[in-house]
Length: 232
Image (cartoon, rainbow, N blue to C red; front, side, top):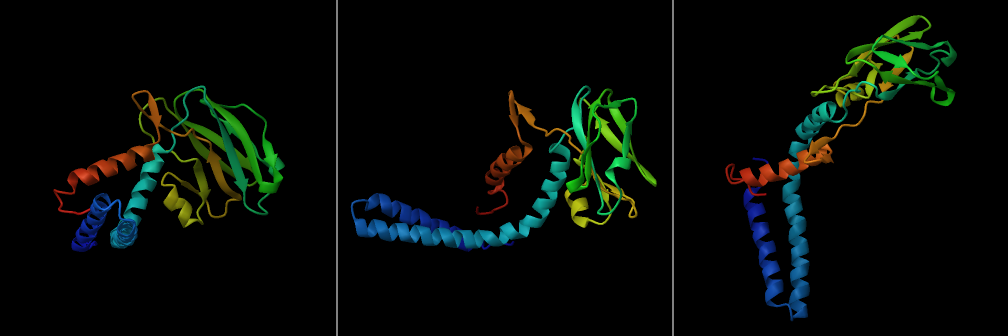
């Protein structure tokens, strides 16, 4: 409904005709150059006709990809795996030296805090010990922030490296459906957990989920175009 199917069909026919002309008159340099010029022109027209439906689909497609990324982009920690946990303060929030991290029984803190004053950030390395939703507690002067660390060996779990953030950013919420909001008056700007990137195993090949979505989109697009009477 958003594309001019007749124009697309005519344009593709023109392109095929000029390609056929190239093979028929391959020894006639003038005709070959003219056919190549026309192929280029009609390719531009084809892109123009395809641009409108592509733009129409862009918003729902991006929203779908964001949801898929929250499920397939990263995976939880497995027992005995390590990850970096980062806490970033708001500008003028507090001094980094007063912040501590304690962990529940299912997680251990492996390293002393690494303070990065230029970025207003403090990092720790943690190691998972048991499966389940494990607790981290950040002790910031005047507040205590609890953060879940997800440890699992199987199944899809929605996780986000940006685990918690202040409630000021709509973009962060849109791009991270698993995001947990911090109180508006918190000194902490965000908390990140370096969850491992996820790949999907297909016959011993580890493939990124976006590649699978791209391939399936092409396959189903061509397979169903006749059913929906759509010219691609």
